[in-house]
Length: 404
Image (spheres, rainbow, N blue to C red):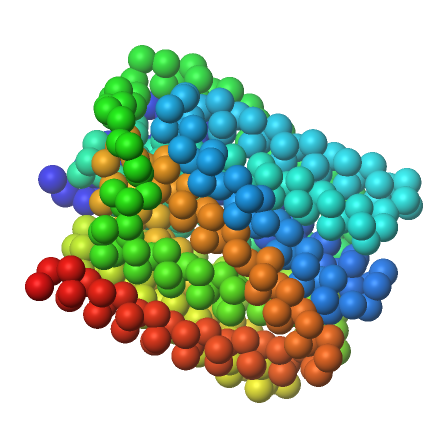
């Protein structure tokens, strides 16, 4: 089967395109709103800690309920979970818009809405990609997930750029802009019910597993994905919440240039994912996942040393290339190597490890508040590099003991 045939077949699969569009919109709006919220919070409070906590609160619900939602998404219709998540996103954005336009917005409002929006992500993350795995042929799963990550990375790139422009010219209307996209996402979630009513081939495999986690954790790559995800979400990704603070205090650029700076990482993600989407070789998938994590940590460490805008943009772009390997292969490995009756649970456990990010936000926020934002990024990324090596070595040793 040629690559073009796989691509066409994937696009023609009932329900794939609406779910794909939802993923792109969700990513665009999430990164758009994170930057807008960070800008408003820093201007209201001048607190690096609160900026970091705002980013962390968007993933905190994944830690609290991610594994539970993933478990139940295997038992019930995943389409209901996807639909419910789009309603949460839409409601959160509309509330933020009303508070902004009436000039009543306060820091605690944005922090609360970030957590509420994160609850929507907790429903969407375990259900939407595992739903894709259910409806796609097994030979097309890696391509489908790769395509999904590509459009998500496009949102990761264009979202901050759009946010920078709206902050400069239409700040009060930023959240109505994102809510209009979420309305489209809600409509797409309704279309999923229509287009997939008679065609969810893999969803019928519902044999019970007494302990899903025990079954999954025996898999070496599943275990590696969870460990690397924990490291990246505590010591790597929270550092990017400090980019607006760096832009304001060190690089001293306007909001439009800030949007381009933040969007540079997304541009790297987008270009990287275009090249690696659909990779079927499992050894290459594993290599891209682990090496991508190291590339991001190294790039963000060097970024913390830069006070030149162009250099900072280039470093975040290279960091984005690393994130492409990490994020694309993270979902591909989980969905492609997991039985259909465990996909929701597997994505739920993955979402739980992503949900540890608030601890990282607290860590980097406290360091940045005590010292300088650049120092917090530098120390956090260095901790991540050391821990990554240690944990991967321990996992490899455990695997060898199990096989001997």
